[in-house]
Image 1 (cartoon, helix red, strand yellow):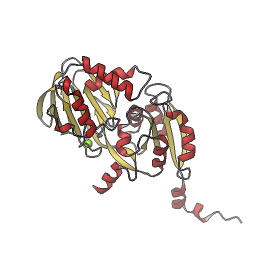
Image 2 (cartoon, rainbow, N blue to C red):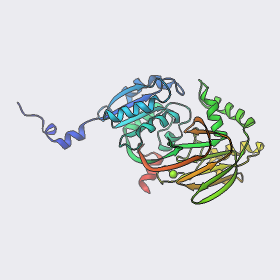
Image 3 (cartoon, helix red, strand yellow):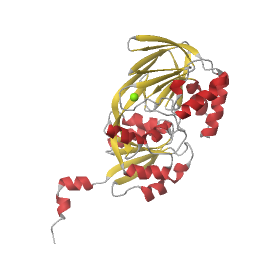
Image 4 (cartoon, rainbow, N blue to C red):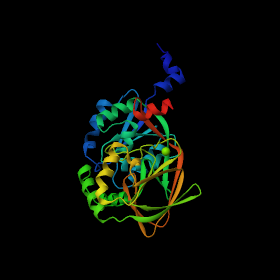
Length: 320
Ligand SMILES: [Mg+2]
């Protein structure tokens, strides 16, 4: 018996049977700490005929981007961000303009993109959904050259993200309190929005430049956004009177924010926002500060992402 197995002799079949190389990038300090048992969950729920896995841990901010680039160089086919929108942002920054697919296991605050793609918010469930996910190409946004995948924002949201930066404890409760704090001190600014050859003057409390639909916690700030149409949904919350804050939050939760009289919304593939002084901004919930013009540009279909089959996004992408 010297013959090799007929399947092994067929290069096409053996390529089909070859498991995909997948690496999970875990921030051991982020979010809700459930990711500390990620190894057990992967052992138990990942389809090991389909995937050959590794787990890498991050050690400092920005490390996830370096690790994602390393995974690309080493020939991994899937890189999974384990964490919240901030972790996804870092991993995606290492994968843009490659064929390597981004997967998500939500384990952190937020998880807006994970919810939109249909990974849910439970770690074990998300690993099962990875087993039955298909690559689709999504758009990426860039703010002054730095990428984001779900949304970026200017103003009040940016201040909240900057306040959250120093917090070791994440989740809805600290987010809620930092929002209240920022709500008391943040003052709306005059701003100019330049897009499609137009200039629009606004009084701006928050400007959200959205690729995806929602913040975490199922809050739809840009209900009409699509991650694959080559356009941003730009949502401006104007000078929101303090007594209308709760109305604003309720409308975000119910997906009816565009109906409020303190909201304007636009679509654009490129937009420049001009305001005086320093601006609080966020990239997928990670805070930063900028002086000068804020230039947003979309790059259509620049990232491969695994979308769970039967998830809300996959269904809409297949039917459209
Ligand atoms: Mg879009």
